[in-house]
Length: 451
Image 1 (cartoon, rainbow, N blue to C red):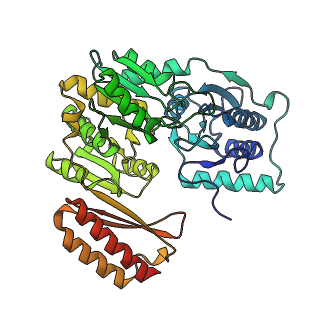
Image 2 (cartoon, rainbow, N blue to C red):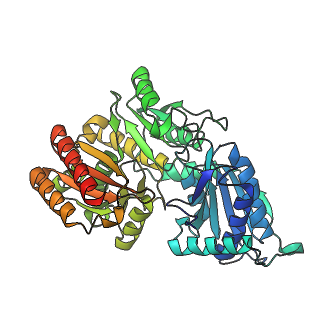
Image 3 (cartoon, rainbow, N blue to C red):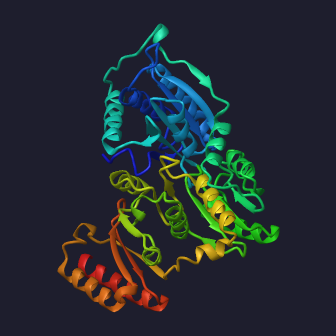
């Protein structure tokens, strides 16, 4: 039996993998594990939000029912981004928070993510305890069911979007007056609050992908489909464009000419800005092993350090907390600024990027040029014994030879998939043809050594 929780909560096709019964059961289990301190009347409080997927409506009803039946007071904040639910969990001093979203996944999917007190992601140990309780209850183990005045009460909190927008604008070092910005919200959870936050900060806003109907989330728009953003920025003569995903925890950008600015470049731009402001702890940026070598070289030129982690924003967060670092993220645009957020926040990232443009008077293209993206080739090698990646002498020799060919301006990474019987071969080099050739040779070596 596999682990129910993945790298970012529990996800699956809504009403097939992720059912109302499962949502209710997980909520009851989470209430027992995360209830912590109670309110004055003896009940803890949980904040519950969702993205606009149609399935979120029935899943939210199941989550609210489960929490209230377990003696938790529920504060429903409605459709809001994942980072907004995390923020409100802390701001409202709730015992925990629940977000219903499958992030950048297509509409049929949905997911449940829990936040601990303060809006922090759960440690693996807490997820394991919730899963254990959930499976025990599903097997018939009884749990304490409050009655009478002990059951939870449900209230609506309509000020959540305004509170969150004010928090975002308050995080900016300067206003955005004079900038024209296209904001693509992926027909998702930030459809209202992201354009509003940019407008409050002084920008002229052109909103696209901002008409969610429950079915169109992430559909040909947002951070996973930048084509509409590129076209809109050029059409409207905007200074830059910002795209978030369905739950708005990640952000990618395009410059005035419609050229992409990825998460690595955003980290480089914000790293330099925070260093100048004196807010970049230890002059260090945290990123994953998949970040482009160009990021490392750019930071080194700027006198900054890069710490790499395993793939996944949770590992970036763990390293940031461990070392007290202020900025980290992923190439996908999942950027974390710990002074203002406990998780990746796409709207905040876009606002900070725009604030840097406004403060310097330089275009996003100029700022993004601090980092040159080196050609990066990724090959998936299927049907191999991924467990032997680190134990094969033949493969070790092939990697050593590849690193010798690339020298100081290249990088090799072999990474076993966490979910499939395959090994990912990643090669970076100053020359695209060399990167392809070295990656192809390493892929052949993986097949030979591990096949």
